Length: 109
Image 1 (cartoon, rainbow, N blue to C red):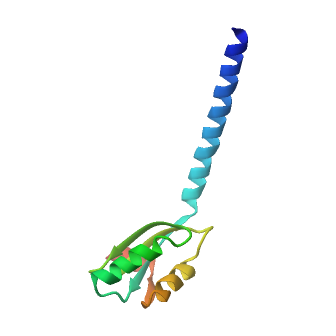
Image 2 (image 1 turned 120 degrees about the vertical axis):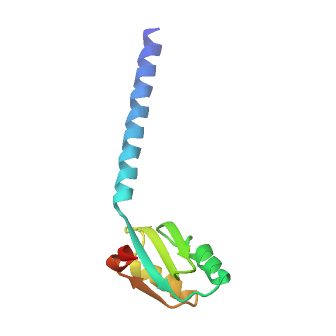
Image 3 (image 1 turned 180 degrees about the vertical axis):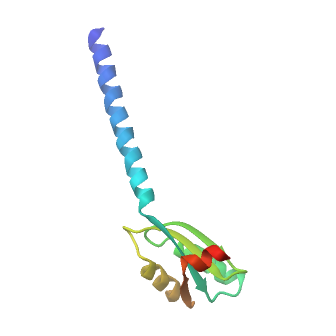
């Protein structure tokens, strides 16, 4: 009976260590995330769909928001997996012109 209790306590201890380490990793990943907004030369729903379909699969992209009316693409990405320049290049490869909207301009809109 004591052996079962000892094994149970040991298993619970290792499970709690694993969950704690996993939580710390998720917090570290959040700190590495940045957001960039591009002004993109899109003009129709097909353009929007093309960007959503392709850019969301780019390495490091965590979140993507495409606003056709404002012609903007906002991307939250992991800085360890990609860069602002690589994301811009990915949009350009799809056939669009893209330029970064500085963070101050984005906040004033």
